[in-house]
Image (cartoon, rainbow, N blue to C red; front, side, top):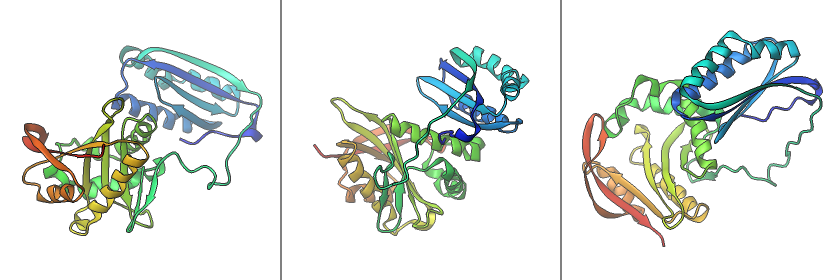
Length: 295
C-alpha cells in the first residue's frame, strides 16, 4: 500500500484503528481488505494506510468530519469489530482525529535509493518480488498452470485460485521479506507481462543456522529451456551474497527426475530420504532431502 499524501486537502480527518492480535490468519486479512474496500465506497473518502505487524494499524482519511464520523459508526464497521473482539483481537483502539497540516517527501531520483526489494535482471527475464499491483500475474500463473502443477503440489481449495487470495499472498510475500522470514522470487518475462517461474525460500533461520528451505515451480511451456536453472542460480546467488544464507535445503519426490537434475546442476547434495514426508496431491510422498552448503 502506498503512503497517503494529500497536503492540498488539509485540514482533513482520519479514523485510526490500532489493534493487537491473538490470531492473524487468512480470514482476518481478507476481512481487513474487505473493510478497506467498503471504506472506498463511502462519500468523501480520501485514502488509507495500513501497517500489519505486532501491532496492526489501519488509518482511513476523510474530507469532512461528518464523513469520518459516519465511517466510525458505520453498521458494518461496528459489526466487524464485534466479531473481531471474539476471534482476533487481544485489544484495539479506535480514534477519530483531525489532520491540520502535512509535510511529505517523495524521492524523485530512483537511482539514489534502490528498492528494498530485489530486482535481478537475468538473461531471459526479471527476477523479483511481486508488487501488489502485479497480483494479477500470480493469479494468471496459478490458474493457467493449475492442472500441470497439481501432481507436484498439495491439494488446493478453490479459494486458493481466487484473485483475492493472490492479492493476500503478494502482500504476505512482501511482508515476509521485510521481516526476514522468507523470500519469494518470481521470474517475469522481459516485458513483465507474465510469471515464467516461481521460487520460494521459506523458514529463514538466523543465528547459528543461517539456513532456509527452497521450493519452486515452472510454467509447462517453459519446461526444458533451462529457465528453472536460470531462476534458481540468480536467486541462490542473491541469498548467499545479500542475505548471507549459506545452507539451503530442497526436497523432491524420487520420481521427479527434472527436479533432481536441476538441483544436481546447482550443486545440491543428497543428504537422505524422508519417508511419507509431505502430503502431495492427497498422498503422503517420500522425498529426497538435498542441500546446497556454502560455509
